[in-house]
Length: 107
Image 1 (cartoon, helix red, strand yellow):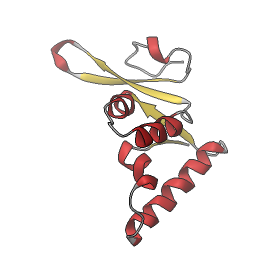
Image 2 (cartoon, one colour):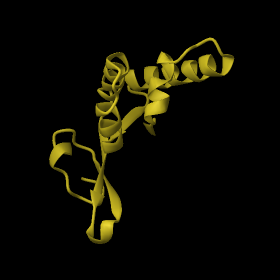
Image 3 (tube, helix red, strand yellow):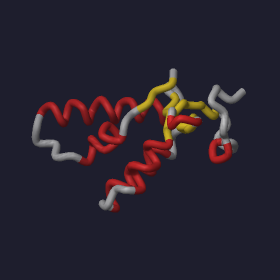
Image 4 (spheres, one colour):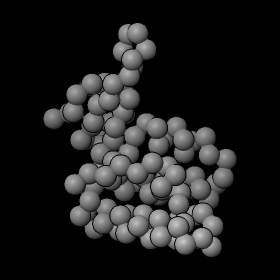
C-alpha cells in the first residue's frame, strides 16, 4: 500500500511533545515510518515535499525531512499544461523521476 504524508506530518516528531495530542500523532507517524522502512508500506514523495523542504530555514528539520523522504520509492511530480492547469504523474522508477514528463503513471 502506498502512503503520502505531508511535510507537517513528517515534521511532527520534532515538535514539542508536551501535549498528549502531539505525542499521539508522533507515535502514529513513527509507526507509519517504521512500516515504510520494513517495506510493509510504500512512502510516496512529491515535488511539493522538495519545494517545502528546500525552503525550510531550520537545518535540523530540513535534515529530518530529507532523511524521511529518502525512504520514498515513488515520486509524484506536478505537471503544468497550457492554461496553467496542473496534473500529476507518478514515476514508479526512481531513476526516471527527474526527467518524467508524463501526466499518467509511468509503466
